Length: 93
Image (cartoon, rainbow, N blue to C red; front, side, top):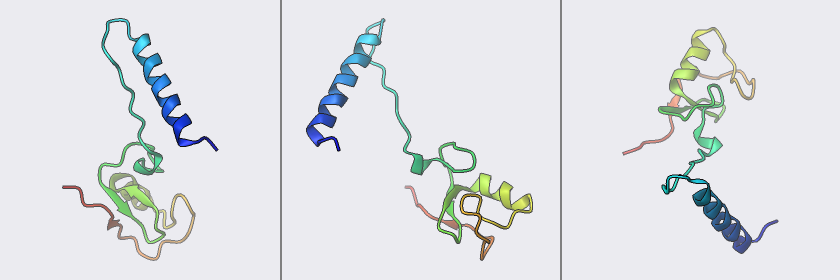
């Protein structure tokens, strides 16, 4: 297990390396999207996240296509869905 000061040190070092790689003097940052924010079906960032009866969250567009294709199981767990109505899981203001 890496201690927190080692993580901060590694992050600083990575930031310095990233700044050195920039040729035109601009600082470039690459954002990493947490996997919890990605839809398990499309692997894209979820725009309208909804939760199925199995407790797994998907992007509404992806899960709607999955259900319309005649699938009645959860794509990730393969459990039979108790209801085909996805629930809104987050409210972003």
